[in-house]
Image (tube, rainbow, N blue to C red):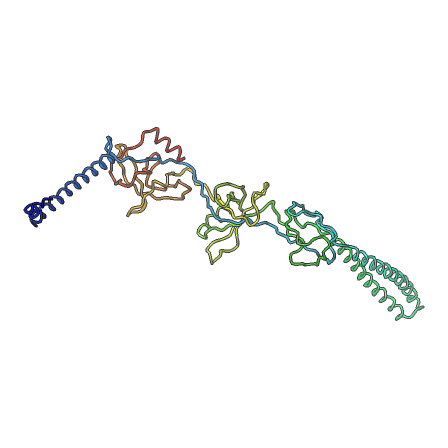
Length: 399
């Protein structure tokens, strides 16, 4: 094998030659990068400025309309009446006449406690009452006779007075006996446990055959009124003034109950009152909404979203919330002029609902405001506006 040319290798190892090669490569890379950058900028400029020479934007037209003022707050379904069904007497439970989860009406018979001990006591006191009543009648006859004899001085005055006191004593005894009779008649009635309110009865806590004690902790079962039912929710104290004012004016405010995801409406009710004080720990006040709940869509302790219709502002300027921008001077919108340039207008806003906001000043009905494509806009910038068909579709969708 032949040896490489030594003179050629010495040239390659020359520092001056190496430096020239490196500089030539760097210069070539720089030219390529500059060319690529200019090409990219030109492409972006061409994309941002179409044939019309403006920035493409989405617009919507400001219009007049009515704006409902709705407060949406988290609430809890609370029954108007929840009763633990108790017994007022002690005894063995002989009958259970309801099914768990059953709808019952006020006064329906739910269970029976063995009444026989109370019936026996009733007979005893009825007999005692009869005997004491007979003694009272006899004493009254003797008292009447003594009073006649006393008028003719035919009987000792003390004897006549003693007989009069005996009548009063027996009168008291008869009243006492009558009270015992009434008590045991009431106890027999209490042996028949009835529904105190209409509603749905829950899980049974005592089974037939058990000894049921008056005032037992869990009672027989829990009875919950389902129709009507209420939702308790809170509102911030800074909204209280408007709500209280409207309640004094119209007496009732409509409210809707939506599910916990706030995606489906459950039922409609009304608010007619609010709590008597503000909760200082949260700065809120409670309201109770009443719902007829005919289909029992609301269930006790269920979390719902309460949409309270406080008021409706009529004939106000309505604009999309997406048109609002924030700048050094506050809130503003870009209004599209007739020459397809935009003008920044400072506005004042009122209440908002969903994607719509009330404009109280700064623009007029019929103005077209920019809702998208505002990133590169400035006052006086030229824009490309969609054709009337597209704009009309956008406006209808917004409404």
